[in-house]
Length: 153
Image 1 (cartoon, rainbow, N blue to C red):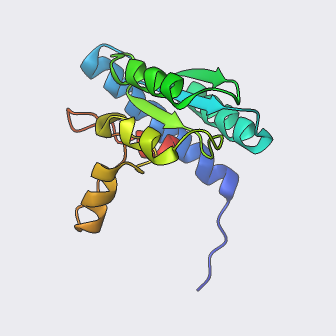
Image 2 (cartoon, helix red, strand yellow; image 1 turned 30 degrees about the vertical axis):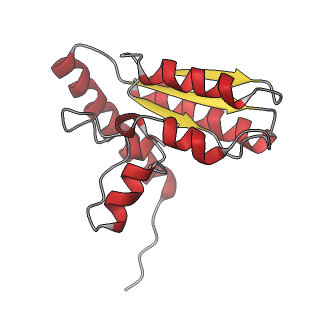
């Protein structure tokens, strides 16, 4: 028999569950999880998407940082930022918002994101595991958690 779902209630329940998981992560690891969002250019849809991700993070207790770069950013500059974020212990997940401007090879940027911080799961390690029948939640922390990352992004 068909069942009507209350989307707002379902979202509120998921948000409360995520907030509990994040609080448990903080107690266990002594640090708040963090998401770095990278936005290159001024695509309005991308701006809305990233803004909504940051709001979702705030609601469940995840730190988030937005790195906005101009549309004339070079690939070298973007790679330098990704490497910096890969090495930042406060950043547990990296979201590079696509599409990127035409002077930047998206594949090179996707490959540069550490597999342990790949929120989208677009990197070769994540896709390879999926193709081999061993999918994992994107950006799963090396300790086996947190499971919340794939639900925020």
